[in-house]
Image 1: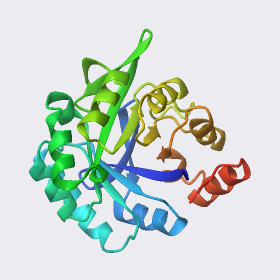
Image 2: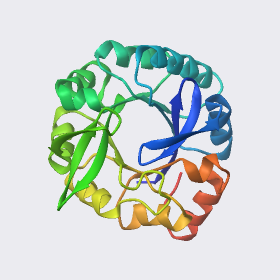
Image 3: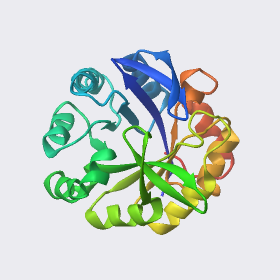
Image 4: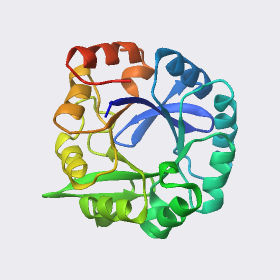
Length: 249
């Protein structure tokens, strides 16, 4: 399997923002321009996360997805505030190829099975916002604000059984720190399930990206700050990984 490099665009009120540990948000730019740039640089996919998660912000997000889908020819994933099959359908109709579900799945796991049955497993991505608790990790909902006390490893396996086609694994502890991915968390989840796992949260160097693949055993790597603030291009990342012997697209 080849490793995918996926830029993540956290969108609030039509603008890309970036924070630290899901807080301290700052404006980073226009999502359409970012998407076009990353597509030209060779991104394998692009993920949009609506961190506003309200009806109004979802409408704005769908407008963004429609604009991007007309000028970018890489797979698009949309997440944030997805509550129902109709929300999934709206996102796909707007031009998304996949939909990421987090809080709604914790509240009603059947959205994963019904979504997979209706649209196909390849369209359903389970997003897990994970935070370390003693010797395990808990899955959080509501944008990382509410501890559901759900064990991340158990939840990952259950989601796979229900029909999720992929897991987007977000480390709340490492998000925006640029101190590296939570390799232990990523490795445990990757070894627990057979569906692809996307490592997310903490990339601060090219070595961190490589570690997520080599040590964390991730199938894909989500990157935000490293790209948004022009520290590296997607080409830089892919060249580095290729030199390290990683198969890339």
